[in-house]
Length: 92
Image (tube, rainbow, N blue to C red; front, top):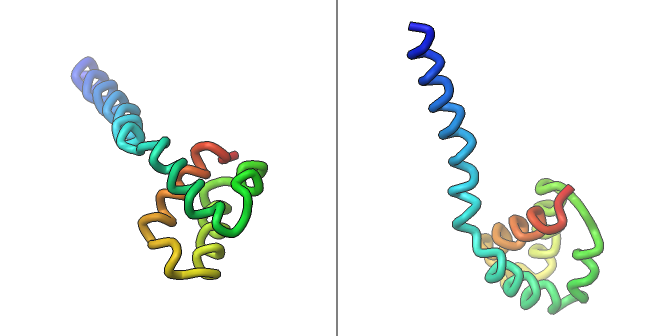
């Protein structure tokens, strides 16, 4: 009985560890970088945000604030992509 419970626990742990990597594999970093460079360089050099490190919540606040300055420039999907890109490359 303990062997069966141990096997199930091990399988569950394996699945939980593998799922985030499968989801992460779907994110196209190069496309996100191109979007970031195109959209964000309209108002400031990309070196400005790339010189900072913030967690995902910090990047979300910053990018959404930038979206508010020119709402038609960044869609909500683009905002989500830029936030993900910055949190992966410039995260804490």
